[in-house]
Image (tube, rainbow, N blue to C red; front, side, top):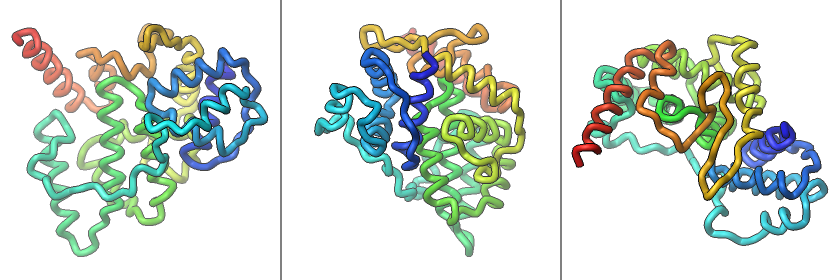
Length: 276
């Protein structure tokens, strides 16, 4: 069943980055399983675009016909981010649960947009990194957020001041989380390490752990519109639906101050919901 994982990653890479990858032959049952996963994770448009680019030689007619249907529901362009985030409402910005980290974020953005050599593209990249950090803390890997980050890096990489970005990452103390995100880009989308200056902790064992965790997706099944995942190492891997209050603590060693703040915030939120 690893074939589903391999084809999923290849179609995702093709749809997001335009890579031409060879697709392996699969039964219709496996194709529908792949599509159900793509819809649950919100990356059907990437998969559809990738399949159309590659062609129908290895895709069953019924599946290819579905890809060619004009659907307003899933026909979303892959290039959805022009990279022009609005930094005007800084006082209302809340990128972190921890007030200290959030104030640092607001300050560095304010300083950058008022500097002589403002780099909006660099700020947008920082925002996308933080969005992925938040996804990890909330529920784990968000494939769509990773794809959006990867697309932005490939499209605007030459306009980004990576020296500034690395300084901001240190100020916000998210070095380890950004390195973890970079490792996922390497495994999921075959990024080269020199494309990811924020990849600081390279660990082949970590790469293998990520690959193995993603391959466990072979046991993902769509039941009554809900996603159920196999367990790896005693915990659910890459589940965008389950949001446990304790999930942030899994990344405590990567980002202690924010993980603990997020955990406490989740507890208070749960208690508030009970009162209601």
